Amino acid sequence: MSNESKSPFRGQGQHLKQDHFKVAAKKQEEGEQYLAGRGAQFNTRNRFFKNESTKEHIEGIDDWEESNVPTIYMEQESKTIVNKVESKDVGMSYSMNPYAGCEHGCIYCYARNVHEYWGYSAGLDFERKIIIKKNAPQLLRKFLMHPKWDGTPIMLSGNTDCYQPAEQKYRLTRGLLEVCNEFNQPVGILTKNSWILKDKDVLQEMAKKKLVSAMVSITSFNEDLRRIMEPRTTTANQKLKVINELSNAGVRMGIMMGPMIPGLNEHEMQRIMKAAADNGATFTAYTFIRLNGAIKFLFHDWLYKNFPDRADKVWHLIEQSHDGKVNDTRWGVRMRGEGNIAEMVAQQYKKYGKLYNMNAEEWSLDTSKFQVPGGQGKLF
Image 1: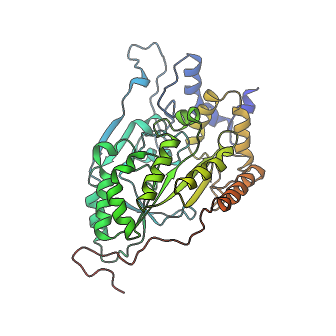
Image 2: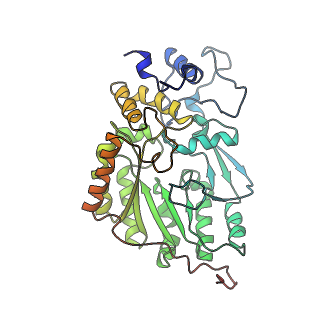
Image 3: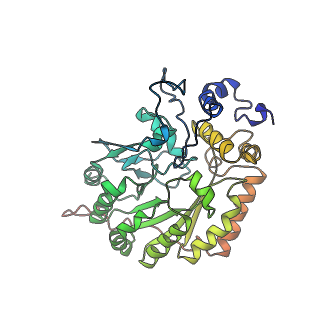
């Protein structure tokens, strides 16, 4: 297969390939080991930087083994925690994220690009340099005290996972939920970590007041695939246990199947939906793979290193679903794709959703109970 056929930049300028892949290609030529436990295998350039430093010679005296670099938690006092969501097709109006960067290391994660705003790379930096917003619960309390706030639902994990490994130490998500429960502030949660079970008590209290709805992300039951695609997440079977335990506790549970990747996991949609329904999930959502910003370089590198036998096919199927590219910025299309492959996935989703009685109920978080503790509640 020629290099041209493997290029993710056909029609986008070959200079991009040279700029972003020369370091990764050099590492492969020199035989550097695969970084187990990490999704990304190198740091992409930060688009906001004019200059950058790279490791040019593997035999250098200051060389160090990247695979041994531990995750670094960087604590900070943030100025805000609740963000207004401008995107029209993500199903939320506001989000809050107690952590920036995510140790889960999912290779496809759209949040990787956001790490560049913090001055880091979307690659290894994203999963090894985690920013801890230590004052997140205090900031939320201050935000909810604003006289014009009306209790509009807020999404936890609108960007990075609020139950990633850092939560075991900092418990910021727990603090945010306790504030929400105190104010009767409705929240939605999306996670792929079983640590959410540690908060079952407060989630159960909120569920009784229709203040919480949670989704667990399941992309594959193939453990070999999960371990390299989402290296520090919990297993699919453990995620089903999370759905089962929380749904039995009265929490409305759903699943996010995202992203569906043709040639890798799209054929598992029925199995995922059935298993989730059997364990108490009542609603679903999905996204089709899109590779925006630096993610296309990271995913391409990952794909050809892990699936050399089918990498060309998978890459071209993604291109076919985004008008010859691997990304699409059009509202309403970018998350679903278009063309035969994307339509097939959409039809599967509709068919099996109906078969397993998903999304059948009319349900919404209750915003009427919101009130400032000791105050007068909502004024109409």
